[in-house]
Structures are given as structure tokens and as C-alpha cells.
Amino acid sequence: MDRTLSHPTAQNSPAPNSRTSRVSVVVIGYNDAAHIADAVRSALAQGPVVREVIAVDDCSTDGSARILAALAEQDRRVRVIRRASNSGGCGTPRNDGIDAARAPYVMFLDSDDVLPPGAALALLAAAERHGCEVASGLCVRRELPSGREVPWQPELYAKARLVARPELRTRLVHDTLCVNKLYRADFLREHGIRFPEGRFIYEDFVFTARMLAAGPRIALVPDTVYVWHVRRAAAKLSISLDRAGIANWQARMEAHRQSVEILRDARGAGGKRLARAARAKFVDHGLRMYTRELPARGEEYQREWWSLTRAYLTTFDAADLDAAPAPGRVIARVVLASGEPRDLTRLKQVAARPARLVPPYPRAADATPIWADDLPHVTLEHLLVRPMRLLPLAVDGELRPRAGGTRLTLRLRELYGRVAQAGPATVDVELIHRQSGLPGLRRTAAFGAERPGGTWTATVLLDLGALDGAVWDVRLRLHFDDGTTRDTTARAVPGPGLLRRTVVPGGRRGVLLVQPYATQAGNLSVRLAPGVRGVAGVVKRRAARLVRSALDAARRASGL
Image (cartoon, rainbow, N blue to C red; front, side):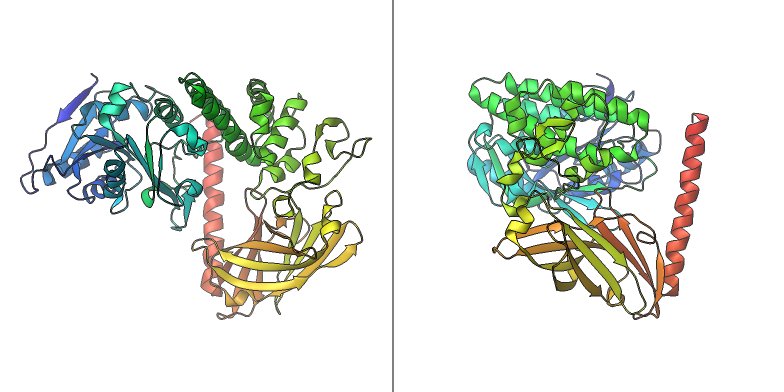
């Protein structure tokens, strides 16, 4: 085997008790000396429930080996495996960890993430209480440096439950992570459940599919058991964030294709149900995510992405698409209907969360709503019966900072007669703190008809000077005369003077920099920087980003 094992000699930590220490935590890392110690320590901090922490160093060259050796000296539970050559991916080192594990249960941890206190105990208690092969808990994505946390697949972990067979809870295919789970080691070995070897991106997809296809009993716990660190400003992006090249999309589709085949080949009808759910998830999650980014890519990328995606979607059954939520289903059908990229900005709005359908709103000769006059077979008849709370309503937002207050103008667009039928009444506007998720300002305004039958307008005055310097997201709740509501966002509308930095007098520090901007999904948000120091800091950071962008462009041009 292509590895060497370092045996710890630490004498200052108690020997684990095999009856109570039931978990092996496998930590993998490659050239991540800045973070790997935090990962290992978070595993050790789980307490006596952890029998060993197997740190697999994938032939790092940055000092990681020295750090791991020091940790092994400090705590006898740390076992270091150093691979003699780099594997090129995450799967091989995790497989090394499975092979080396001596405890009855196994968990996985990446070197740039951490386990929160009590995670291993919560999962182990659930697994042993129910006698099940797998226990799974909530993962949160923590944006750094802001610290904002976003739960991953929270619907699965709203309450504790036991899933007797995976096909009884097909939403399990949505959680493709391997790191927020505890596995019985003999279950993995008996069924040959391993990760793809070598350079294989999205190896979690295949591993999770193999696990589900084996039909385990799964205990779901509502506890947070994994903290996934998201460092978007890192010099080298993680695999999941580095989506600029078409190879990433190709790798995602290939991993998904293999996963679907594994599920479909599982014994019994349950596998087919899981395979269909996995394809519906691809349409709702992966397809929407990459579609949101498509307008920002170059023309060559767009053409290749469109061709590859169209070819892959042709392998889906009509029932696969029917099982997907409406926004992804519409995107898939537009891609299948056209041989060339088209309507990318409009598709981006449909891919947003929540989805928005922006004009035009054409109809076929029989009055059926359609995507476009030249694609009459891509119909949108579901919009005529879909509940108001789920309709992809388009609300344009214009934020104009002024000395006496910032004016937010909202324009709600008609959608095949549904808006007029419901009767727009009022809109609640909330500014939500990006990091904490807490509301800062809340205002309510009445809608008035700007263009009868076409657009309804509401205007609110916002005292942004009363808010802290931070990023604030605009959230809306629309109220209609028929008693229905719709929670949505405002679409940031580009235009002269609409999305630019403006310094206005006032506020608690005398001056305030206001920067309305469009998020990646096109939603309207605003960045605030109070005081002279805050304004100067924004300017400095902007200059630094421009310099980094210029250097990156120069490196790409030189082929480095």
C-alpha cells in the first residue's frame, strides 16, 4: 500500500477504553498546514467517545507532516498515515482511513473543517440506540471570514427519526455529503462501500450512492455535527467552489451519472425510486446552481456547457423531469429544446431562489403560457394553477440613496393574469443582516397600479444610517386582497446610477457609504460602511481586489 504509518509515542494522554471509545475519525489533508491542526483538535475534543484520530497526509509538501507528528506526540489517540505519493483526490486517503480504522464506527473530517463539540457522541448515541448502520446529522456551511452559517439540507434534520430503508425517505439523496455521518465500519467493509480512487471530483456522490444502495437503517439527528468552512477568498479554492472551468461541470455530471446507475442497480424497486429522486435533485440543485453562474462565463464556456448539459439531459426520462420542482424543470426543457445557448439572463432569474420569471410572458395560439414564441412546446401551464405562495413573481427593486433617507422603489410585474386576480395590496420590506440572519429594518407600503394590468409599484423610505456597517439582504412579503401571501426577493435592476457606491451625509457617524448590488442570483442587497474610516476601508479593499484580479489575469495569460 502506498503509505507509511507513524505510531504515536505520547504518554500524556489516557489510553482509550475500547468499550466506551467507539469512533475512529479519519482526517484527510493535503498542503493545508494552516488548518489541519484545528481539524484534528476538534476531533480530539469530542472526548473519550473517540478512540483514535487517523490523520491521512496525502504527501503534503508544506509542513503538514511536522504538525501532525507534533499532534501525535501530544495525544496517543492520533495516528498519522503519510502517503508516499499524492493521490490527486479525496477518495484514496479516505479509503486508507477506512482500512486503518480499529473502532466499530467511522467518521470523516476534511482538514479545513471542524467537528463541533458533542458531534461524535450525538451520532453514536443515535446509532446505538436504534442499532442502525448509519447516523446522520446537520451540517452548517460557515462563510469565512464573516462567520455566517447556512444549514445544509435542514429539511432532513428538522427532528430526530429512524429511516428503516432509504427509499422510504428519498430526500436522503439530496444530502450527498459523507462528512456529517457516522458509519458502522463492518457495514462499509461487508458491502465494499468505498470512495472512487485517485483524481475523482465529487467522490462523495458515489460513496453516498453506494451507502444508500446497500439499504442501511439510518438515524437522523437534529444536532449540528459538522462545520463546513467556506473560504471564497482563499488563494486556492476548494473543489466545490472552483467552478470556473468546464471540467468541474463535467466531473459533477459524471459523478452524478455513476450515482444514478448505482442506485438504479440496487436490488428491489427502492433503488429505482432513489435513482429518480437523484435525477430530480440534479435538476433542482446542480442545474440551477450552474445556470445562475452561466451569464458571467465566457461564450466558449457557455456553448460547451450547453452542449454537454443538453446531451446529459437527453438521458433523463420525462418522469425524471416531472419529479423535479418547476424552476429546474423549466430550465431543463429550455436547454433540451434549443441547440444553442439562449435566454441566459432570463434563465438565471428562474434559477434564483426563490425563482423569478421576468418578461416577456408570451402565449401560444390557444392562450397556453409558453417560454418563448419560437419555443411553443416549452409550456408554462403550471403557472395558471400553481399556488400564489409558489409563483415565480418578479419584483424589480431600485435603491436610491439620498441625504434625507434611501428610497426603495418596488415594481411587481403581472404574470399571466394571476397577480391581478389576487389583487396586490401591501408589501413588507425587511433588511436582513447577512451574517446573523437577524432583521434590521422593517417597513410596509401599499401597492398602487403604475400600469394597470401590468405593473404595481410600492415605495418605502429607509433610514440606512440606523444600521450597522455590514451587508444587508432585501426580503419581501407580498400581501394580496384574496388573503394569499408570497415571500420573495427584489431583483436588482441595472441602470444609470442604480448600482453604484454613494456617500451620503448623516447617520450615527456623520457619513455613510451605500452600495446597492446584485448577488450572484440577481437579488438586491446593500453594503453599508459608516464613518470616514469605514468609507476608506471599502475603497482600500476594492483597490486590493482590482490588483489581485489584474495579477490573476496576468498569470492566466502567461500560462502559469
